[in-house]
Image (cartoon, rainbow, N blue to C red; front, side, top):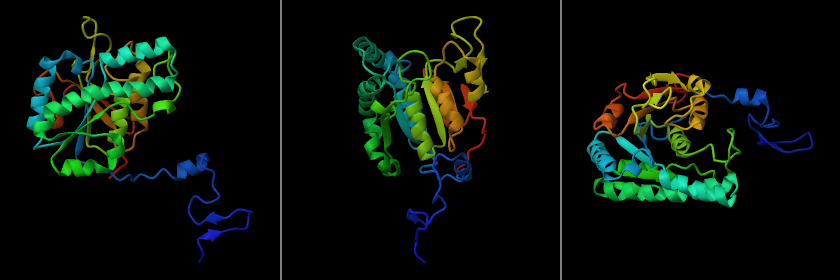
Length: 282
């Protein structure tokens, strides 16, 4: 039997989606398959804060690098990093020049490459290797050979960065979102954000009235509309839509041993999870 079907003036390839509109709500509901294959289910995505860790220099970076090197034999890891103060400076210049949103998203990734290279140089004796998104399909090759891939966080929307949902002209999708998207695509086991605070608070943790949030849903955290957070708001929206990875953890990377504890599954920092509660992947 031929796989080509005609009769309505068009020729179709026989499939479950033939003659269907790809924006049909009915069709989208029917494609809601619970099974999603994980590419590297035993890997841990670790997001190293640009401003919170990298900008602090050797006192913050070297102990973290030493801890990561010691964890290499026990855990598969992919490291990602943000741009920190230099990214903010770049944004400031771009805004002053009147660059469009896509232009701002495009240029900040180059700044993050500086921090990526710093981590790669420091971790090179322990298998640290530069990981660019063009080599995404080589990830398992790196991991199976004992390497620690290190990448930038900025997602590759570039000129196609969606218009912001928030007031202002800064991109909604920053390094927190970019690294989460990568972790979701590869089906990572864990997503850990290494910051300079113990987790998420209701306000600046230096204030006596600040309350620590040990566990919450992404939906609830968005609804609180906190004045500031150590993670991006768009990350919370993305987390609610994820299939493979349905929770993230925010820890203080300035405390030695915290990353080791988080990778061991200890309940430290703040756990933020999706209302899905459990992944739809295998």
